[in-house]
Image (cartoon, one colour):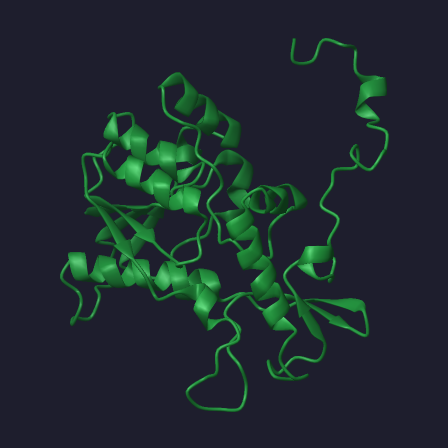
Length: 269
């Protein structure tokens, strides 16, 4: 059985890889694979550089290309434009939902599987109908809804953090106890699934924020229907231009935090 870690270099997959390195998870993986969309924040690449030096197994970096560069690019054939990320659609100012998501499969799952096929000698061969690869996925106890069996018969999925009954906070505490820097969330700069908290973290980096704003504006710079969609496109769920979205917290906007009235005064002491 060939064992491979799907390494996103985020809060969950980082401690999972380090736990394997320390022998707390086993058997020892043969490698880890990081699928690079080309649009991760700078801190993710810096963290991955440090993490690679701490692992006793190789880390392979694979890529399907730069996700950012394809957004709004002309297709080689056809009259419509490429839209490789899900976006929010508004018609006459009224939000109308979100487009389909294909970026995870195209830029994460497919390049990882391609590399695994290469590593186990299946590049030009038909895959067997029984598992020969065990893929470790960093899903924690608070994200069990994300657990799905692998669609490939030759790959079996394993969720070591679930086995350890670890949630996201447990992962952060493990990192702290073992003297490692706290990893930050790993996701694309312009991911439309960002919460306002995550958008604020992006905005704190002027370069990353300018990048996201530019892509958001590019979505609306094309003629109506260029993406085969009826309406204006946005990265933020409010269906407002990202540069104009109010990302402040309720407390910053003067709203009362009702928890303070209920608290007995001992939380966090």
